[in-house]
Amino acid sequence: MPSASTGAPTTVVASSAAVARTEAVSVDTCADTSADTRLAPGGPGYRRMSFALFLAGVATFALLYSTQALLPLVSADFGVSASTASWTVSAATGALALFVLPLSALSERFGRRTLMTASLAIAVTVGLLVPFAPSVGVLIALRAVQGAALAGLPASATAFLAEEVRPKALITAIGLFVAGNSVGGMSGRIITGWVAQEWGWRVAVGVIGVLAVGCAVAFRLLLPAPRHFRAGSLRPAVLVRTVRGHLANPLLRRLYAIGALFMTVFGAVYTVIGYRLTDAPFSLPQGVIGSVFLVYLVGTVSASTAGKLVDRLGRRGALYLAGATTTAGLLVSLADSLPLVLLGLVLITAGFFAGHAVASSSVSHTAKEGRAQASALYQSAYYLGSSAGGTLGAVAYHSGGWAGTVALGLLAVAGVAGITLAGTRAARTQQQQRRRVVAVQH
Image 1 (cartoon, rainbow, N blue to C red):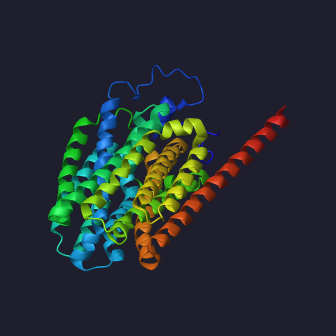
Image 2: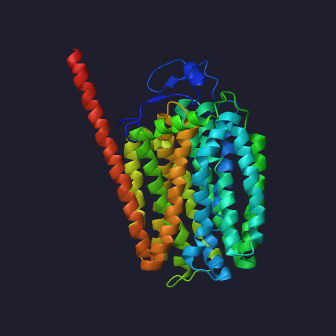
Image 3: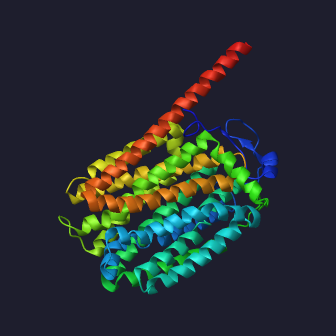
């Protein structure tokens, strides 16, 4: 199978031109890597770096989705509808999507570690204020600020990995960061569910804020100093030129769309699942609903093993499998049986995290320069998908129940399949053209 999800090249180039000239390594060649000072599994610093970014991923998703499992309680407390309450999630993810690109530009100038540290510091500070929101409007505004602050994490983290980790270990390293996202999302929802059942949603989000403080401190203490970062320019013209170059790349456009569509499914499902399980025929208490998010452990496994999946199926094959798994989960979840609903969530979660890990790592493989901007565009599309999925999923649930939310998810997965198929055809066309050129030359 070809090496990229929709035809990506196999040569991995570091984010800055200086690093690219001296340290670019072809995955498909037998080049000597003995002088490569980048981190590799088993080498010094790799484990610390992986754990530090894992904790950053935990804090990011725990904060970003801290109100998602609590939406029925937020609705009841402020007397608002599900679609209004869903904005406490959509505002955070939407703000992240809007700010990830400009903050990625700052990381090119001031460094990945510096920006990630500042972003976490602001986000956890706001997180400690969220429990005291006097109205739903103030709550939504605070969540938007929190999402904007968290925008400094995703693109900077993947750019940091692309610069500091050897190419062959890149998918695995990014998979571990994504696994941290899944653990953060899971633990945040479980903790808030049980705490909220006893003491209310405000105490629950306060506990998440304290948890995130601990993760942020440990992250800063553990993350090794960057050794391969080269400061770039903050000139707007340079940023615009880089962004235009990425958007002109059809492969990157496909990957951005795939990330957005996968996240639309995930955002829709997990925004309204609490309402479904609160309603008949399940009528579950808040603590039990929070425990349902243990299925995120499946996402941890599927994200961290994405590299092995790509080795066996190729990136496009892995994306097809991720889409098929997500589709199966959506259909199974339609049953009015709690075990089948849980099985559906397991399949949806496994498919989503595998697809996200493959697509995001493919962006890092594909971008030849301006990696932070390439990753930022992916993250922007990804979180716009989350914001759209949360809002549209709530509207669909209000209009057509769970079946309406599932229909929205199936439509998004069909889009993933169509885009991946278009990439497959484009790759075949390129192969045929290369063969014709070779035939003419010989």
